[in-house]
Length: 488
Image (cartoon, rainbow, N blue to C red; front, side):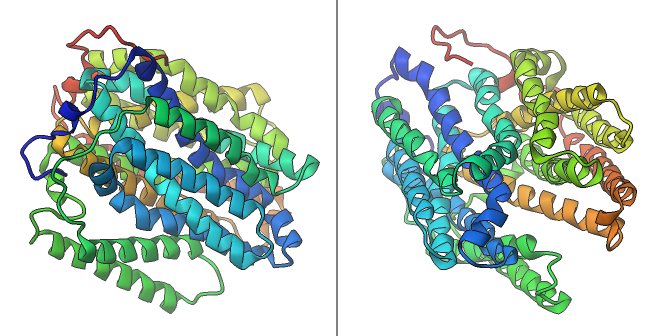
């Protein structure tokens, strides 16, 4: 966030080498994979960890929530950190902190240490996604972003599918601590490669950090994330939940009023005046409300409703990754042919229809149909994520790229939390108490939850309807040919 009209960062950084251009998407993709895999792989190990640490499984909620809270607090400052200290230093620090936090989690001897070290992990994880995206935006022209982003977004789709299976295998055949130790060799290799090949974009004149804004926004987002994490638990009354929700909303409103008075706020909310940015961020938020609950609902349907084992359930979900990789090669052509408006409206409707088709899965559904449905769902969600993530930068100047990346990542994190909460709420509403003992009632309740989320996803097309023909052409049309084409 430089005080000058344009960023001075690019002029101070040597042109990336051929090796750097080839490796950069891989470095960012691997970091995204580490961050995405961490939460999903841990969910499977909750019973084993709670038993080993002599606590109730309910107490493990703090282990999961502490990571989410840390993300919510530290994502907002990631853009300022990258501008102030440089993308290479911050990205490398993020990997280092995440890796060190993983090591500390792996040697934890009680629940309190584990919660504290999960916060450390979250500090590193919070910087990975926004700073990684920012580095890509500043390295490659906008005409290449669709291809690059489609590649680095695949790990975010694959990790939630591999997590439950991998976590189950580790707990069954090794030790729960291995879940955290897995990140150590990957992190060390990543650190070395980042220092060798990642460009270090930084701003010459970085304004002071908006401390008041950080306190207001960070505490508001953290409290809201906590409310979503504990939503539906019997340990908190409705009055307590509503009270915390009111406080978090008040803090966020306070930040909005505060940011309007500053020239250099923590988050440049003026970016929402850009139509493409507004549609991408808001559309992503509302679409993920429906999509975000699928990783929660599908294992519940397959295991509790249909009686599959965790490994079998994971294998039924795996074709989503194949679908995501299969469509990667044609995403740019689809956007160039039909435009962002046409693709996002039609694709969002198709995803909603696929969610509705999940309601046809029952005890007599052929396995091939489940696998085929998972394949198409993976392909269309990959197209959706890549389209939304690249549209964010279509009309944003390089000067505002760091703030745009921070806002997009913050909203994405919140939408994921809201998506899981929405899935849990709809399932709890439609599944009667004790229905888990009756598979048919459980299946019926999950079907109703899918129907609700499918309709919500289709409804989110209203946001994308605000786009105009030609919006996003700067990133969907390859107007400039480059000699360097990173793999993927």
